[in-house]
Image (tube, rainbow, N blue to C red; front, side, top):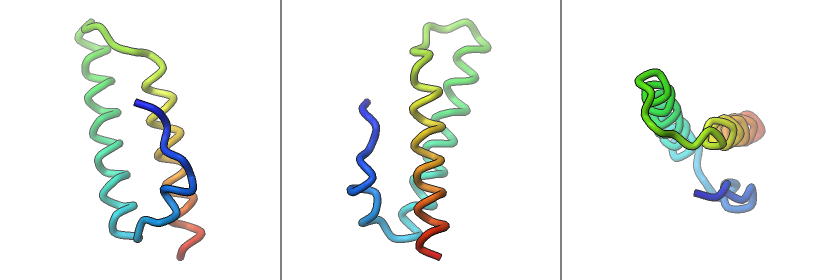
Length: 64
């Protein structure tokens, strides 16, 4: 899954941003769980998810 473009994210409302952040945090939790249980994972996904969460939170802060 590719990173979202910032231009696409700017069209989201605050509620949509909150929902997306929650979804990404759950995905990050699931990845950590998979890593802990020694399942095969894609390590780059950690960085991508954290990056996208940071983008969304920055955008939310700018909109407030």
